[in-house]
Image (cartoon, rainbow over all chains, first blue to last red; front, side, top):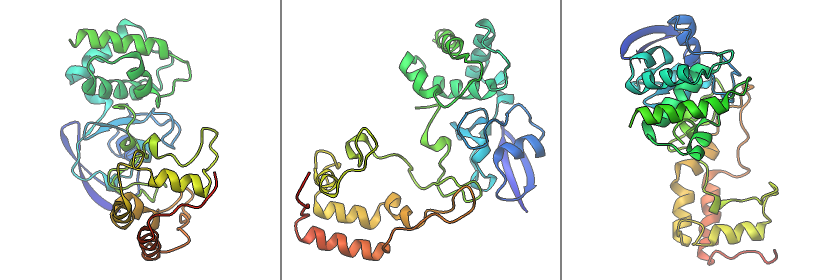
Length: 154
Length: 119
């Protein structure tokens, strides 16, 4: 076990965990931040996406020991994030969600896309969101919502 | 791609507890440096050699540049420190040491980077 000082959503958090513990389980089990979901556990579905130093990152395969001083941002902070708020509103406007399980990861990837590419093309969206899988195939509505958000962020 | 970077999974070092390889500036080689055809068949030695030595495809590296690449590039060096697989077993190392690799590369460069005949 080792002690880690983490910057989660702008707040300093201290956890004592095994260095091999994936960030996902630190968030969910130690910090009780359950907005980030477990999907495949092998970094293949995107459900567990968070931002680490502004990079969309799969938290299920990311050992806490490799975070260092980099800030972590999770879905819980998106309501207060200027881009995240607009994306969440667009999600509601387009009624994107089916079961919703994958959507926190979808939104984290969408926000990362829009922060980097404010006016994404269809190709930008498909390539950037291609690692986020939805069992209910909400992909068309996700693309529409990202376009709505991009318009509102102009 | 902002939502799906190499760094979405690959960190600055190997993540041995999860089996995810990592290293500084982890990335795929560009398509110009591909070592297999569109059907995923590996190039022949002759075709691979031609691809590696073609300065229009290899970031304009001449023989000494290729030698330096083999000697120092972190992603080349990673091959000798590949970490563990997801099941915890060690990844396989190349059949020769890095020192031996550099020696044979230097010998090849000094010979003018010859390629074997054939397709």
